[in-house]
Image (tube, rainbow, N blue to C red):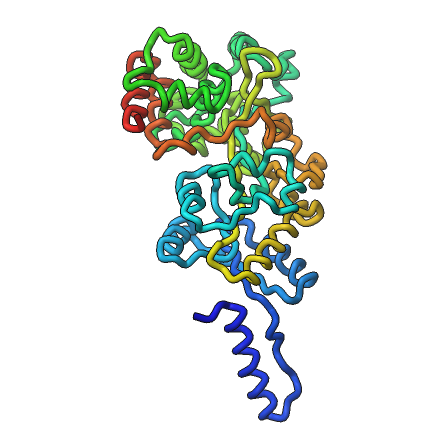
Length: 416
């Protein structure tokens, strides 16, 4: 079977022969290597197109074909299952499917590539599979609390650093006649508080592994009312109960955004991805964020994972793999990834990118990304996550600790 370089070469020979027969002297570049870049970021296609165009100007021997389709995740799974792995694959390395593909030898080991040195320490290693790096994570999402900084200043409030301070802030907001939280506590939009629940466990237990030990790796039916960790987490989840806008249990994500933007509540728990939709509401106040408070000051955390992460197909020819690695290396250059950051705004692992204040609202959370203050989404080691979202809002709405304990055991028992 001919690889893409050979096909291009044959096409070039045929084209040259035809042109020569017609009396033309032009010919094609038979040494050009074509590689496919499969992206799952449809909304960033225009930016990626420009980056590719700039890359090709500097590397005329490489032709990068961008694939950007709807329902990209399903398309990619189907292609990989059929043995059709794109040369450069945009995956989510925190997910089980990526880990399985990497373990099965679908991707090239990037552990010794020099361009990893252009990333913040530990950024790529966080997603290692069996001790090897198969993914280049270029940026990350993250979770925290948006807040109305203008109103906080008026009330003399500071962003909380500890959970005790968080409770004091909520109490003072209520004392001032204001509503603390803008929330969407419906089953449909229960994903919005996923980060809240995961970070409650992580800050209480001490981190990612400790939380997995308390939940997924605990004995069957081992999550119990009365356990100090469970009680602390339940207490933190309870802070939302009774402290939201009216009818939060019937509100959608869009409703919660509007509640916050209209200043009908002063805190909006969500991920940094919500900033564009908040900005679209043109709020008449200064928006900012704070990270999830810890037991002590300095123990604040965020949760998130790679958003744009690229792998190289192991099934490509040596020329295709070399060209793919060259493109990955190009993306780790500061001026290149700067173009992506300036549009997307997600915190980047590329050390040379300048965060110039364009996304100052999310800075307090973004600064924790790619540091020991960020944990990877806990569900990266779970087969599913939706029921975890559902049991979270159920508890926030009803406050039944026994049911929360039973629901957690039901969810995690299947993994034990």
